[in-house]
Image (tube, rainbow, N blue to C red; front, side, top):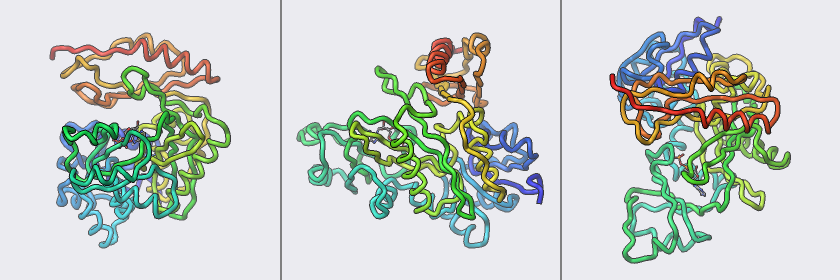
Length: 386
Ligand code: ADP
């Protein structure tokens, strides 16, 4: 069957859905989305069901007009996905994987039960258990994470153990949590893994996140990462091992920490295209989005090889902008060769909201860093009246 005869249904029509659709346009693939009225992918989806990602009936409606279903966000109604899968609907990745990933506690237990290296942890139901449980953890700091509902660092608190032991400490996270040993001075890395229904597997080259030392926010993503070949191979093997052990079909981001002793710890898995794979659109022979399309359509995996070293900068909502906005510096940025601007079709900005991204390619790592800095410095945002 030609790809254009298969209808793909995406639960969610955010920027990841938008880029998945953009990648399928050369093959004239038909896409249906379910999301709110003003979703980023609204203008390019063939059909748009307006509704909540938790509405079982709307998900059923999407399924009824689609040959295969996927999702671009973890926070969705999973019960109806289990029902639909039982009824024979093709859902990629399988809801059983989403079930593990939606709960950081189950995810950590999965790592532990499958010998996947990950920071030691304890599970707590409520705050009365914290002080006892953290006695089993090493180090002087923990990462406390809500088991459910967190994203983009929301639902994660990095806390000093002595603070928690202080009788006056006010617990902010009262719901069931994972308490995790803090990996000191970690470099944050990510591997995007693609695996098809036949078990063929290909990973994309390792990505490194560079943080701003003052704001502590991710400033740039680079691929390849500046680590030894040994570390690179280790990370790629661990990432593939995770997805094989999950029996995952689809695109997955495996986020990891590398400590100063060269040990690697898996942080978490995302069962969908990921921010750390945006650069693959221009930097790799096959992007993470095209790869997911291929998997959804049952076509062969494409080469994940990097064509040129790449950097990626998120365009984030400025601190002082809440409302209609304009980006500044674009003319300067677009005068630089090898720079690709992606905008997510969002009318209004909020501080830290992901509004777009910019991919930068260069022949050498040094040239890449210079160019990335130029782009970062030129980029700005201002509030406008509308
Ligand atoms: P989210 O799912 O919201 O992205 P993460 O679990 O990735 O949350 O945590 C957000 C950030 O917190 C990470 O990118 C990292 O900087 C820091 N972090 C989380 N867990 C640890 C840990 N065990 N050790 C060190 N830093 C951590």
